Length: 367
Image (cartoon, rainbow, N blue to C red):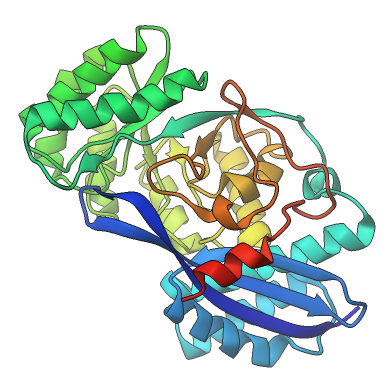
């Protein structure tokens, strides 16, 4: 079975309400949809981020892949070698590679008539997810407005039965964020899990004393406390705070994860299947995590990463955003999205990754 064509399309989905995190403002969710078709008319698809930049790399990679047999590992290595010569092994180029790799695995699963988690070896059939939200309103810096926004957002998760929540910090003054954390803990009660995502907003000498103040709220993990390339700084934070540090959503390469592990910068790794090389790349990180006794908590893309979570013991939970969330809207172009019920998700029943692309919706959001 050989690759007949690879197509990349860009879509842009407007948010119901603009939001901002500590780094930038969001008005749209922008994705690249990648479709791979074989000479046996089996089609696989996936998505990644970056739109026009990602599409450009997908189109380049298509030139070396069309006509090749569907051998996922060999094609992964071929793409990695091409990237090392033409671009680099990071950023946009890895997003493009990841989307192609996942689409290839989708084809393999369909050709075998199996969902990917069965093909890779089923460990469980369902997994907990945490509600990821807690952003900031774009139109006010008043603490009262931030708390109102937080209450509305987290309230949606409570109404839907979630028992774990993650909120952003770093987009307001330290005292405001401390108040937001305290407010959220009171809102969800003492027995639900609460995590915080700093989105690389702090210097180590700021976040360490701040973390000592919010540790009383029983924080499950502190995510990306300092600049993403400051691995020594993150290691210093990890050694001086009581809660686990989580890191990895903004890292793409084996060398970066090696440095995180060797420096003890995190106890929880957060690779994103749409960033780190797709299914093939992610499985490498799973092996490394198992060797070092580290947890995996995949970033975003739960519709795709659920297949990995059901086959990898080191994954204990997934980050969850759906089309009802403030930010992650890919489900608007999926006919059968993976939806949480009382904080639990299961994989789709179909072969491959099981997700069905809604072509009419894709046409509506083409950009």
